[in-house]
Structures are given as structure tokens and as C-alpha cells.
Image (tube, rainbow, N blue to C red; front, side):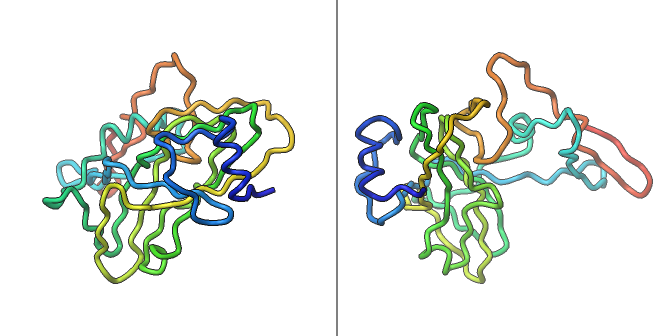
Length: 212
């Protein structure tokens, strides 16, 4: 069951949905808007000595958070702090708001793009819209410009919306996500040592292959 605007307001008042900072208003009948935060990153090319690089996410050693810390960089900004997203470009953004869906509330959510941006060719997620019950943190957005025009992205822009759904039975698993975790990415238990990603990044040329 999708929550209506009145049910969303009630859940916010009861602490069953936590949005920090709180939304100024709920402007649609079944969703709540979130805004773009200050952090916008892009993937750096993986090259070395003329070799081509690729990532192998099928390996047990694959760890997205550690990989991103090594191979992403801040997108260059305009004087006003905005980013110009060129056509056929992919960046990672993070919501300004922190979201918490307490497990006891049995509420999950989906992050979706806003229609006004979609009509310009802006996509907000790539096959990873689910925010699981128990989630805590800011939401990573996989932002693409699939249109033909450069689009200006300014922190504070209403970038996406959350649609909330009732979960009718308690889950067995527990979700624990860091503030930079992506919706749909694998969670990592607190206290574990991150695996180093060298072996999942490979450089190849012809029949040669090396790892980082």
C-alpha cells in the first residue's frame, strides 16, 4: 500500500519516518520531495601506462564504498556552486536530507525522479530505487543526462521524490547503511574491516592483465 500525503504527515509526526532537515511542505498526494546536497562526484578514468581499466564486481573482494573513495572525484563547480551536467554524463549526488525508516514502523520507500527534470532528460537512479525498511542515512543518487541539452544542477534543487509503502510483515534481515550508501547497494556491518579493492580493478592491453 502506497502512503498518501496525510499518512506521510502522520508518520513524520509519529517518528515512523524521519527526514532531517524536515520537509518544508508535501506538495503531491503520494510523495515527498528531497533536495540535492553539496556533494556531487564523478568516476575517474582507470588507466595506467596506456592500459585500459575495468572493474570486476563479481569478486568477493569487491567493496563499493572503498572503491568509490579511491576512484571518484568532485565534479568541477561553477562560481555559484552549481554543476553543469553535459549530455551523456553520469554523476553521483547525495541528498541534502538524512532519511530514517525505523524497522518498527514497517515502512519502505522508493526514490524516483521528478517529471519536470525527466522531461529534460535527467534520470535520478539506475535500477536502484528501493529504500529498505530500517534504512538510515542520506541517499546516493545515480544522476544521468540522457537529453541533448546541458542542465544546471544547483545544491538545494528539488531533485527527487520518495514514495512510501507499507510493509505488512516484519523482516528478518536488518539494514544498516552509512550516510553515503546508495539505495540498493550492499550494506556493510559495523565493525568489519573494509576489503581493499585492488584486485577488483584490472588494467589490460591485448592478452596482458594487471591489477590494482
